[in-house]
Length: 321
Image (cartoon, rainbow, N blue to C red; front, top):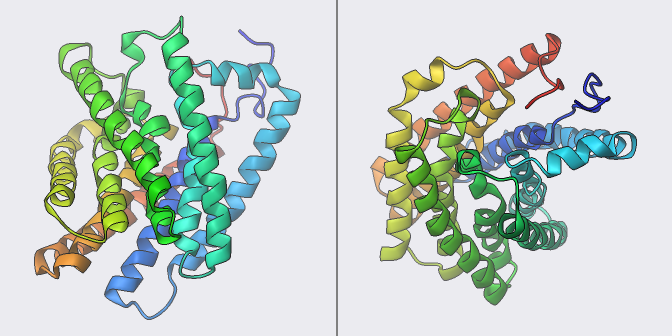
């Protein structure tokens, strides 16, 4: 055990990025909801500014951790599960690029450049680690493995709006093909091997995020709602139904920071449904978008409450396996 195992700062987790991803995504969902449903006031901005402040807080604290406890950072980076959370940093910049596109195009482009660069670097690095690893085992596999490489499908959403069409296709192709490959492997692990431990059960929600994001990206690149776009959306819709039918399972597990895996995938499907309504003007999608936004809001409130409660009880920033 590391000599820093009892240090709160030394145990400050990289998966805190999942908290930021959920909150940033919620800001995006609120923004898109206001555009479609015409709330009449910028409800998303307080959440956005609060998340940005938390983002800065995380960067400062984790930078200090890197300086004071480099061995703990190295252990996280070499961990077969925790390593998948580092690429969330790229996704935060990419979501900021999407949010700021209608507000400040120049700033949005800056966020996009940073996010896209971090995304391709993290994808190459983690692919290298996956190929050259010596410690990973099949039971380490879980839906969180989608985060590093499949996250490439997030790049085209703002990238296509800024006119980077070929670059957007480049990232979209990587994310889509790797999602298909990993989806097959992950489903094999879920069906034919030991069940996921309680701590990783919330990652089931990640299953429906990639096709939902791919749907949004594809429609943004092509500008059309064609057959392939519908396939992506309805695959995500089906996986939402499958995952939500397991609600009793989720209600029985104790709180972990991994509960934030409930948030961003739900954001992705909510935004995808809003886009589906915008493109089709079918009343069903309007109703579904409202329902998903309400569910998302309840999830955000409850998971935030449990997180604050865990922080007060000093159940976070402790030594983990």
